[in-house]
Length: 197
Image (cartoon, rainbow, N blue to C red; front, side):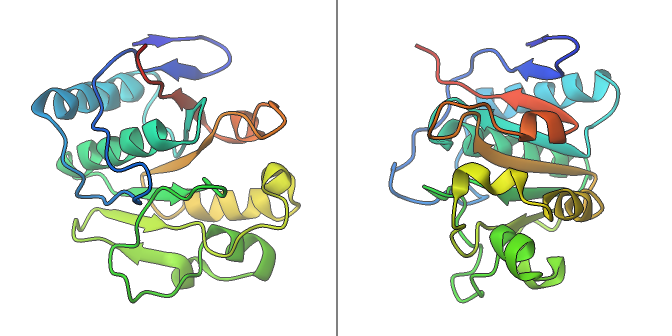
């Protein structure tokens, strides 16, 4: 792990991540190896030592977001093990990553907060782990590549920040045009998850 300095981008380094079914959404109870569990507990400590846990951590991956989602789930579980409340937020609009904890729950999510004024209460989902909650994608955005430039986004991100000690927002690092996500500027810190070659 190393801190990239003033850009506040953190590279986790290498760890073997589980490779679940690429078409299935990931559950908070995703099975992790002992090595991965220890790695992410250490990663959380590392983030804490960089100036305290960030309120909004953009967990990014160069590709579709699967590595970022697995990493965010593992970090949320490491936080819960320390008694720290975590909020997982899925912003992988083209290929949502996080499964709803209970299938019968409504589909409102992050997009509904930004476009339709849905409340956090309406979009927040509890999981079986008391210290972990999540917000799914919700309705598809009209233009995913411009979502984080919408005028309401800063207010929504601040609302999310107030919900938990650490918010783990999962999204691709680049949009379809290869442009770096505005979340790099808007998040308190950026953590890059990548597959080892």
